Amino acid sequence: MFRWLNGPGAVFRHSLPGSTNYLNAYDRNGNLVRAKGRSSTSNEETKKEGKDEIDDDEEMDEDGEIVPKTSRTIKEPRIKETEGGPPLPKENMEDLIPFPLNRQFRSQHVLSEELKNAIYERVMVEGQSVRTVSATLGVEMSRVGAVVRLKAVEKEWEKQGKPIAFSYAKAVLGMLPSTPYVPKDPITHESINDLPVHRATEIQIFHPVSESRHFTRRDAGKVFDHELKPAEERVPHTELVQLEKWRHEGKIVEERIQLQREKEAKEHQSRKVLERKREEKEAREVKKVETERSTFRFQEIRVESVGSDGKSKEGVGARYGIPHEDRKKGQIKIPRRVA
Image (cartoon, rainbow, N blue to C red; front, side, top):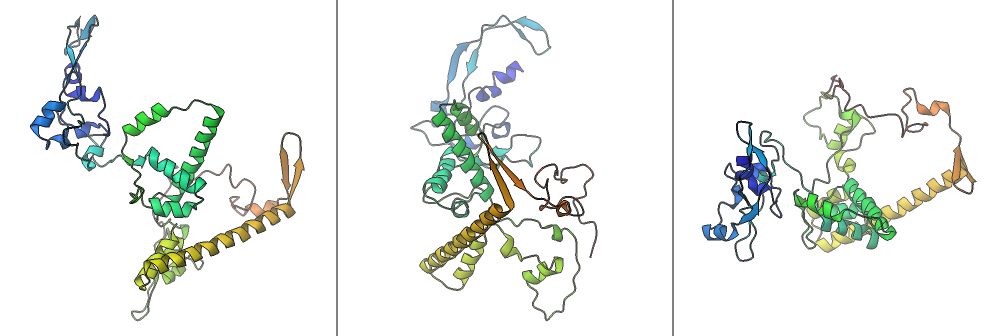
């Protein structure tokens, strides 16, 4: 063990900046695999050995016996970024394997601190919608909302003078692959337009149609459920589908942007109307009782509103006490019947 720690394993004593430093990125001799193409002269310049002496009293040898410890030197990382030498190659998929025996697992990228700040600035300062920021930066809408909420908590703690572990966060982000923030040409962090699986589509259906019939996605949705919308209307970013349709129709970029702005203005107006109606309904149905410390809200609830299975969203307890069953043992996650 000590032979490996003071030999090939010495490169892990001081992590390489800008690298994940997984075992799979190095060979058995402790050499960075992706740095083998660099010139030998640059490698000689970046090679460095430390002079720190280990002077503890005892150590364990290879046979498991305790013997007096001899002084030796600790090798510093042999691959480092130098100002004069060529930069290290970018990490590839082989470098993102944290477990050498599980080569199917790849470490996923996380948001860089600059990208998180950009998301917060666009939503809270510039007033852009979560949908617009998600489509522009290539980050899922739920993740955009989470970043905004956490950044708001962080800034609130800074105002209150609470300690924040910035150094710890920086160290963790330095050991994980991250998506940088490029203002002029944003890098897509993840897929943002995945189609969610609808419960009605969990069964297999053999639906015969005539060869002359024009069978579309809307028709396929009605086969599963009469109220099921087509795929292009159920994806998170339906506006991207519409923009692509306008592009195929031959509309120029300026015209597409103008149409998209008009569409967003109409949607914003409709959301304001729905929000006003919701507030008016709450004012009619919910009775508020103000106290010195809090506000109590009372609303009449019918027992029948929970539904036959007790899980209706209209009833009491829809948000609490009903866990998801997708991770329970024995749950069948494949189609069990054919229609």
